[in-house]
Length: 228
Image (cartoon, rainbow, N blue to C red; front, side):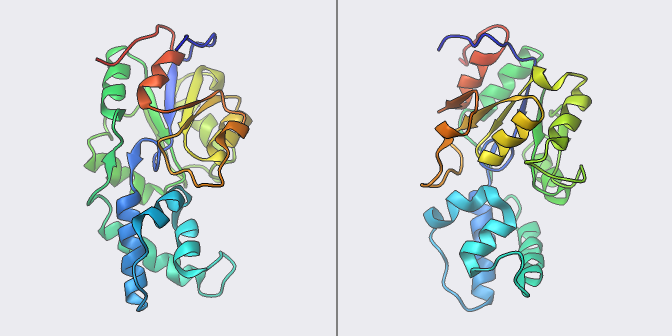
């Protein structure tokens, strides 16, 4: 792939569905909650496309509950408690992410995380995966007053890196990721290995590019490089 004309100085990642495959543990949590309510488990492939949408999206497919439902908060609290107890049983970095992070660090390119996941889950998960001390910035869903797609988390991350927003490239797997990046003056890449649903049309999201593998991120840095 030809290097893009705009060379970026830092890479920011969404967490669920981009950096880390958290769907197995989120699915386990949803099915534990369904079992508590005497419901059968949902298949993993039915849950997976919704894993980027947090408790709200998962409770919708698991119980048909919207945020305005009278029982939503009670179910959400139970879900979050169960998830805290099963945070990193099977969650793993996506294939290609470890090599990408190693290459970024070898080239002294800072990287960070901007996620809508609350800090009570983001921080211990990154620690368990050995990433907490490596990330140059971590912005959780409750770090700023408003989460993505609001641009504030993106601006905050850029400030933490000491860079203008347009020097950062954001990688995510949801339309709100691209919306947040664009609102902040950043370019975005769509991670096609993430939790895209059948109705998603990432080519229409106005991202800089859609990429099939983490190594393709390197084509957008100042000096093209390959992962050995």
